[in-house]
Image (tube, helix red, strand yellow):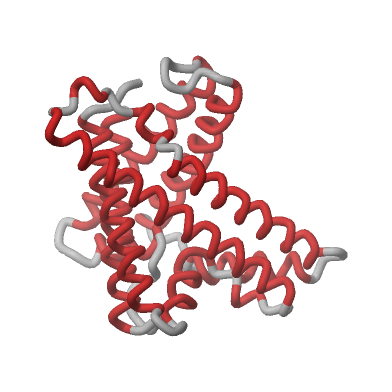
Length: 251
Protein backbone atom coordinates (compact mmCIF):
# COMPACT_ATOMS: atom_id res chain seq x y z
CA UNK A 1 0.00 0.00 0.00
CA UNK A 2 2.86 2.38 0.79
CA UNK A 3 4.49 1.84 -2.60
CA UNK A 4 1.18 2.16 -4.44
CA UNK A 5 0.24 5.30 -2.49
CA UNK A 6 3.62 6.93 -3.10
CA UNK A 7 3.29 6.17 -6.80
CA UNK A 8 -0.02 8.07 -6.89
CA UNK A 9 1.55 10.94 -4.96
CA UNK A 10 4.42 11.10 -7.45
CA UNK A 11 2.00 11.29 -10.38
CA UNK A 12 0.04 14.14 -8.76
CA UNK A 13 3.20 16.19 -8.20
CA UNK A 14 4.29 15.56 -11.78
CA UNK A 15 0.93 16.87 -12.99
CA UNK A 16 1.18 19.87 -10.64
CA UNK A 17 4.57 20.63 -12.16
CA UNK A 18 3.04 20.57 -15.65
CA UNK A 19 0.20 22.90 -14.58
CA UNK A 20 2.68 25.25 -12.87
CA UNK A 21 4.66 25.52 -16.10
CA UNK A 22 1.37 26.20 -17.91
CA UNK A 23 0.52 29.05 -15.51
CA UNK A 24 4.01 30.50 -16.06
CA UNK A 25 3.67 30.39 -19.85
CA UNK A 26 0.14 31.87 -19.81
CA UNK A 27 1.11 34.59 -17.36
CA UNK A 28 -1.46 33.47 -14.81
CA UNK A 29 -4.47 33.30 -17.09
CA UNK A 30 -6.45 30.38 -18.54
CA UNK A 31 -5.69 26.68 -18.34
CA UNK A 32 -6.61 24.15 -15.68
CA UNK A 33 -6.42 25.01 -11.98
CA UNK A 34 -2.90 24.50 -10.68
CA UNK A 35 -3.99 22.24 -7.82
CA UNK A 36 -5.06 18.64 -7.21
CA UNK A 37 -8.45 19.14 -8.84
CA UNK A 38 -6.84 20.70 -11.89
CA UNK A 39 -4.42 17.78 -12.08
CA UNK A 40 -7.34 15.32 -12.05
CA UNK A 41 -9.17 17.36 -14.69
CA UNK A 42 -6.05 17.29 -16.87
CA UNK A 43 -5.92 13.49 -16.61
CA UNK A 44 -9.63 13.01 -17.32
CA UNK A 45 -9.38 15.16 -20.45
CA UNK A 46 -7.29 12.45 -22.14
CA UNK A 47 -8.32 8.97 -23.37
CA UNK A 48 -8.33 6.49 -20.52
CA UNK A 49 -8.17 9.33 -17.99
CA UNK A 50 -11.20 8.19 -16.03
CA UNK A 51 -9.58 4.81 -15.37
CA UNK A 52 -6.31 6.46 -14.36
CA UNK A 53 -8.07 8.82 -11.92
CA UNK A 54 -9.86 5.82 -10.39
CA UNK A 55 -6.48 4.10 -9.96
CA UNK A 56 -5.02 7.26 -8.41
CA UNK A 57 -7.99 7.55 -6.03
CA UNK A 58 -7.33 4.00 -4.84
CA UNK A 59 -3.67 4.96 -4.45
CA UNK A 60 -4.61 7.88 -2.20
CA UNK A 61 -6.65 5.46 -0.08
CA UNK A 62 -3.63 3.15 0.21
CA UNK A 63 -1.40 6.08 1.20
CA UNK A 64 -3.92 7.16 3.86
CA UNK A 65 -4.15 3.63 5.29
CA UNK A 66 -0.37 3.30 5.36
CA UNK A 67 0.01 6.58 7.26
CA UNK A 68 -2.86 5.61 9.56
CA UNK A 69 -1.06 2.37 10.43
CA UNK A 70 2.04 4.44 11.32
CA UNK A 71 -0.07 6.73 13.50
CA UNK A 72 -1.66 3.81 15.35
CA UNK A 73 1.19 1.30 15.56
CA UNK A 74 4.29 3.36 14.80
CA UNK A 75 7.16 2.17 12.60
CA UNK A 76 10.92 2.01 12.58
CA UNK A 77 10.93 5.39 10.85
CA UNK A 78 8.03 7.19 12.56
CA UNK A 79 7.86 6.08 16.18
CA UNK A 80 7.94 9.25 18.32
CA UNK A 81 4.64 10.87 19.40
CA UNK A 82 5.27 13.81 17.05
CA UNK A 83 6.07 11.55 14.10
CA UNK A 84 2.96 9.47 14.72
CA UNK A 85 0.84 12.62 14.98
CA UNK A 86 2.20 13.85 11.65
CA UNK A 87 1.45 10.47 10.11
CA UNK A 88 -2.11 10.77 11.40
CA UNK A 89 -2.40 14.23 9.84
CA UNK A 90 -1.14 12.90 6.51
CA UNK A 91 -3.66 10.06 6.73
CA UNK A 92 -6.49 12.59 7.12
CA UNK A 93 -5.21 14.74 4.24
CA UNK A 94 -4.90 11.83 1.81
CA UNK A 95 -8.16 10.30 2.99
CA UNK A 96 -9.83 13.60 2.11
CA UNK A 97 -7.99 13.64 -1.21
CA UNK A 98 -9.27 10.13 -1.94
CA UNK A 99 -12.85 11.21 -1.22
CA UNK A 100 -12.56 14.42 -3.26
CA UNK A 101 -11.02 12.61 -6.24
CA UNK A 102 -13.78 10.00 -6.11
CA UNK A 103 -16.39 12.78 -5.92
CA UNK A 104 -14.68 14.54 -8.84
CA UNK A 105 -14.76 11.29 -10.77
CA UNK A 106 -18.54 11.00 -10.47
CA UNK A 107 -18.98 14.70 -11.20
CA UNK A 108 -20.32 15.86 -7.85
CA UNK A 109 -18.08 18.95 -7.65
CA UNK A 110 -19.99 22.08 -8.62
CA UNK A 111 -17.29 24.51 -7.52
CA UNK A 112 -13.58 24.24 -8.13
CA UNK A 113 -11.17 24.17 -5.19
CA UNK A 114 -10.28 27.85 -5.53
CA UNK A 115 -13.95 28.87 -5.47
CA UNK A 116 -14.65 26.60 -2.50
CA UNK A 117 -11.82 28.11 -0.44
CA UNK A 118 -12.91 31.66 -1.31
CA UNK A 119 -16.50 30.77 -0.33
CA UNK A 120 -15.47 29.38 3.08
CA UNK A 121 -13.23 32.40 3.65
CA UNK A 122 -16.14 34.74 2.89
CA UNK A 123 -18.36 32.84 5.33
CA UNK A 124 -15.77 33.10 8.09
CA UNK A 125 -15.39 36.82 7.47
CA UNK A 126 -19.09 37.32 8.21
CA UNK A 127 -18.69 35.72 11.65
CA UNK A 128 -17.67 37.68 14.76
CA UNK A 129 -13.87 37.88 14.87
CA UNK A 130 -13.86 35.90 11.62
CA UNK A 131 -11.07 37.95 10.07
CA UNK A 132 -8.89 37.36 13.14
CA UNK A 133 -9.55 33.64 12.84
CA UNK A 134 -8.58 33.70 9.15
CA UNK A 135 -5.38 35.57 10.01
CA UNK A 136 -4.62 32.93 12.63
CA UNK A 137 -5.20 30.17 10.07
CA UNK A 138 -2.86 31.92 7.65
CA UNK A 139 -0.22 32.22 10.39
CA UNK A 140 -0.51 28.50 11.13
CA UNK A 141 -0.10 27.71 7.42
CA UNK A 142 3.01 29.90 7.25
CA UNK A 143 4.37 28.20 10.38
CA UNK A 144 3.81 24.81 8.74
CA UNK A 145 5.67 26.05 5.66
CA UNK A 146 8.58 27.23 7.81
CA UNK A 147 8.61 23.86 9.57
CA UNK A 148 8.64 22.08 6.20
CA UNK A 149 11.52 24.35 5.07
CA UNK A 150 13.58 23.52 8.16
CA UNK A 151 12.82 19.81 7.81
CA UNK A 152 13.96 19.99 4.18
CA UNK A 153 17.24 21.65 5.17
CA UNK A 154 17.75 18.98 7.84
CA UNK A 155 16.99 16.37 5.14
CA UNK A 156 14.58 14.50 7.39
CA UNK A 157 13.01 13.00 4.26
CA UNK A 158 16.04 10.71 4.03
CA UNK A 159 14.76 8.71 7.00
CA UNK A 160 12.11 7.17 4.75
CA UNK A 161 14.72 5.80 2.35
CA UNK A 162 16.51 2.48 2.60
CA UNK A 163 19.84 4.01 1.61
CA UNK A 164 21.62 0.65 1.50
CA UNK A 165 19.22 -0.54 -1.20
CA UNK A 166 19.84 2.50 -3.44
CA UNK A 167 22.69 2.01 -5.92
CA UNK A 168 25.64 4.09 -4.72
CA UNK A 169 25.85 6.26 -7.91
CA UNK A 170 22.17 7.23 -7.52
CA UNK A 171 22.20 8.21 -3.83
CA UNK A 172 23.37 11.85 -4.28
CA UNK A 173 20.82 12.39 -7.05
CA UNK A 174 17.93 11.00 -4.98
CA UNK A 175 18.87 13.20 -2.00
CA UNK A 176 19.23 16.27 -4.24
CA UNK A 177 15.78 15.65 -5.76
CA UNK A 178 14.25 15.28 -2.31
CA UNK A 179 15.88 18.49 -1.06
CA UNK A 180 14.88 20.59 -4.08
CA UNK A 181 11.32 19.27 -4.05
CA UNK A 182 10.82 19.67 -0.31
CA UNK A 183 12.10 23.27 -0.42
CA UNK A 184 9.76 24.10 -3.32
CA UNK A 185 6.77 22.68 -1.42
CA UNK A 186 7.67 24.68 1.69
CA UNK A 187 7.92 27.96 -0.24
CA UNK A 188 4.52 27.41 -1.88
CA UNK A 189 2.88 26.58 1.48
CA UNK A 190 4.27 29.81 2.98
CA UNK A 191 2.96 31.77 -0.01
CA UNK A 192 -0.51 30.24 0.44
CA UNK A 193 -0.49 31.24 4.12
CA UNK A 194 0.55 34.80 3.22
CA UNK A 195 -2.36 35.09 0.78
CA UNK A 196 -4.81 33.83 3.42
CA UNK A 197 -3.63 36.59 5.78
CA UNK A 198 -3.81 39.15 2.95
CA UNK A 199 -7.40 38.07 2.26
CA UNK A 200 -8.32 38.78 5.89
CA UNK A 201 -6.47 42.11 6.09
CA UNK A 202 -8.02 43.43 2.86
CA UNK A 203 -11.43 41.75 3.49
CA UNK A 204 -11.17 40.16 0.04
CA UNK A 205 -11.92 36.40 0.19
CA UNK A 206 -11.03 36.02 -3.49
CA UNK A 207 -7.38 36.33 -2.51
CA UNK A 208 -7.65 33.10 -0.51
CA UNK A 209 -7.76 30.56 -3.32
CA UNK A 210 -5.19 27.99 -2.29
CA UNK A 211 -2.40 26.65 -4.45
CA UNK A 212 -3.90 27.81 -7.73
CA UNK A 213 -4.36 31.38 -6.47
CA UNK A 214 -0.85 31.46 -5.01
CA UNK A 215 0.77 30.43 -8.28
CA UNK A 216 -1.36 32.80 -10.39
CA UNK A 217 -0.61 35.67 -8.00
CA UNK A 218 3.08 34.91 -8.32
CA UNK A 219 2.73 34.87 -12.12
CA UNK A 220 1.60 38.51 -12.04
CA UNK A 221 4.71 39.76 -10.23
CA UNK A 222 7.98 40.92 -11.72
CA UNK A 223 9.98 37.84 -12.53
CA UNK A 224 7.00 35.70 -11.53
CA UNK A 225 7.08 33.39 -14.56
CA UNK A 226 10.73 32.59 -13.87
CA UNK A 227 9.96 31.88 -10.22
CA UNK A 228 7.08 29.66 -11.32
CA UNK A 229 9.47 27.81 -13.60
CA UNK A 230 11.73 27.15 -10.61
CA UNK A 231 8.74 25.97 -8.54
CA UNK A 232 7.66 23.73 -11.42
CA UNK A 233 11.13 22.22 -11.49
CA UNK A 234 10.88 21.76 -7.72
CA UNK A 235 7.57 19.89 -8.08
CA UNK A 236 9.16 17.75 -10.80
CA UNK A 237 12.11 16.99 -8.54
CA UNK A 238 9.77 16.03 -5.70
CA UNK A 239 7.75 13.76 -7.99
CA UNK A 240 10.93 11.97 -9.03
CA UNK A 241 12.06 11.72 -5.40
CA UNK A 242 8.70 10.24 -4.32
CA UNK A 243 8.94 7.74 -7.18
CA UNK A 244 12.40 6.78 -5.88
CA UNK A 245 10.97 6.50 -2.35
CA UNK A 246 8.31 4.15 -3.66
CA UNK A 247 11.09 1.96 -5.02
CA UNK A 248 13.43 2.15 -2.02
CA UNK A 249 11.10 2.81 0.90
CA UNK A 250 11.99 1.91 4.48
CA UNK A 251 8.82 1.38 6.49
